[in-house]
Image (cartoon, rainbow, N blue to C red):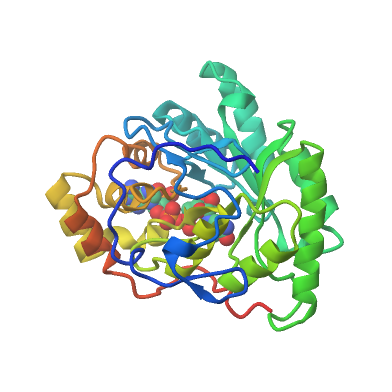
Length: 337
Ligand code: NAP
């Protein structure tokens, strides 16, 4: 396991929801955060230059992942993907988040092949994430991951996630779900060993799914990607990730666009002379949490990238964190066996 110490994130929040809360050990027993066994590299070994969109977190693979990536869910027409990727590269994005179920891996790969030379960039300058679809969970996982690799056609995938803890076609309580995701993980470990998937991780896993994986894996997950915004602070999941050196990554930071009209978010934005979207994204990255805002609008893509030239005060961070009410805009995986 690589153990590299980098500076903590500048301006790291004193978010009340992440301090003074219970953390849990691998067996699910409560632990004191200052007695946590750091079996894997600590999540706090993160880096942010606070001045550019190239700020990154260090994964437990030893590779850096940008704090800012472009979400691509619902970006489907090839011309829309091309336009969004073009705008994102100009704005400084160097990470792109796709998935087999988004049906845009081929368009994303194609757009990057055309646009990277235009912007004086190479494959190595960008970080591509994709995900194994729930229909390929289990014995079809190898086939699914190879299909993602072929669709993107970029040589390798920087980060490949199991998209969902369950299997498509099985009810959530079906006891075949744990075996299927364990089988998927073994396949991803194999492709990781071959260098085709540079890092592997999971998405939408609960604390119980995470502990189960950490107990059985050979390669620990590099990333857990879950819904995270001021109305859903995910305190327990963040503790589990911190304990095992798994990078906690946010999706739906804007609450699918709905949080930009939250009165508290709007007030903080007015006070900081920033947009509500920038405030929501800054709230996450200031805690060292990577974000993936999605937009198909070039102006918003540019606007959403301006996160590293301002800091939220502790008071504003706490006001936003106080909105935590466990609200989910996306599907809830807590019932998946
Ligand atoms: P989101 O990023 O929270 O919000 C996207 C919505 O906000 C879009 O409707 C977008 O509209 C709007 N928007 C973007 N910038 C804005 C701005 N500056 N002002 C006002 N509205 C703005 O939602 P998300 O797409 O659910 O999540 C982001 C990404 O995370 C996804 O695209 C996907 O890559 C990933 N994700 C992963 C999972 C998973 O299961 N792993 C689940 C959900 C999402 P326009 O496009 O019209 O700008």
